[in-house]
Image (tube, rainbow, N blue to C red):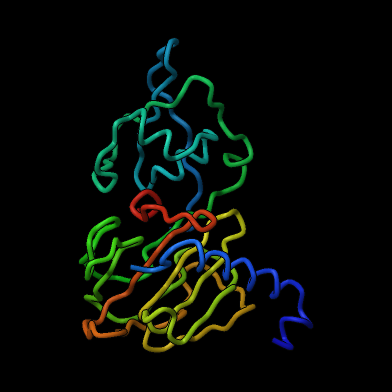
Length: 229
């Protein structure tokens, strides 16, 4: 608590995440922006963007300054994991290209762990709704930062989910990494995308080793498949 009093910035982060914790049951690549290639114009509704290799729906939403949820709705996307190269995404007519995002690279998210998704977003896991995805390691147990950011939260046993780390990415988005056996970062650290921050472990009664990973906009959980390549 003395550290928080001496450091107002850490204090604000701490209070913010206390609010996040109270709002809900919290847990349950860096590439250059490709050239914009609108391939069809529909004056009454907008135009189409053609998905290129490495693009995510989140990147498209940033390019055109349109909310990702709006893109999902107007394109009637039921399974974001099936977005494919060459697929046409309808962009609302009112949207305009974000010239800043085209001039400066948007740092994409990468997978925090090489493995297999064993529980998806919104699935029922031990009687609780999963607010992220659970990834079981297949190659190694290294957990890396999915995007560059600063460590704003750490708990050795957060709500029964073991070692938990939260990164703030500076644009309203946060990533959560839970069920770690070892953690290599501390609150206040700045980490680059791809930096090893922990190793996978287990927590609670479930002894199976897997990473629980979340992406949040403020305290609202997002479907990680919207952001991951």
